[in-house]
Length: 186
Image 1 (cartoon, one colour):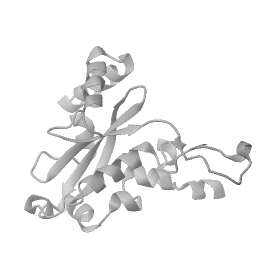
Image 2 (tube, helix red, strand yellow):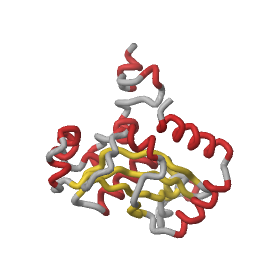
Image 3 (cartoon, helix red, strand yellow):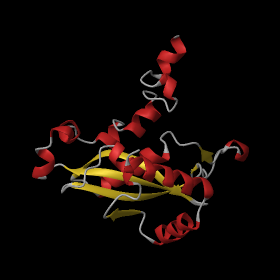
């Protein structure tokens, strides 16, 4: 068994047990800004699965997103009060929203992928892997060429989280690669 498999197992155990280390991390992350650049990924095994390489031009961001439904302002007048719904489900997943926000904050970078790292009572935390479009080590890397060539991947729903909320990819492994519309037809 390789080293990354052991690392992956230790992270899974930490999430299941809600260990003290994880709780301390959440307290620390909560005091940091909502979009925060970090030196190394927290879960290195998951980051490597999603295409992370420890080289110049690859940036890792930790994003904090508030949980819960989207709250809309109450209409001011001319409507029956009982018909003014205020809480609506989001059209995008929290992970896709985290990718969008980090892409806006780092406009010279392109989102490669992202993954879940934890949650507390009011927030979810995701780590987003970004690529600097103009860095020579990224432009010369063939594995990143498709990502760097397309602009605004997070906004157009071309990342894994974006494809999921568009119905192109399913979380269910048996339906991988089939869209929701294809599933309805069959």
